[in-house]
Length: 63
Picture (tube, rainbow, N blue to C red):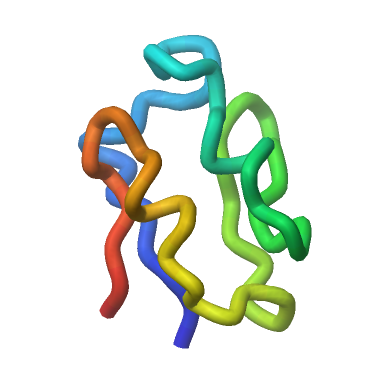
């Protein structure tokens, strides 16, 4: 199972203090910008935790 993005905390790329850093730092392109929100590609996500460690709002977690 891939990471979880809490949409009640993450208000999208435009509202992000780091402007979607999670999408930019994902080395495997497992996060996509879909309509201004980060969306996980579960098949590509190895659950490395890089996005979790770098989310300024702590909106990303592992199940």
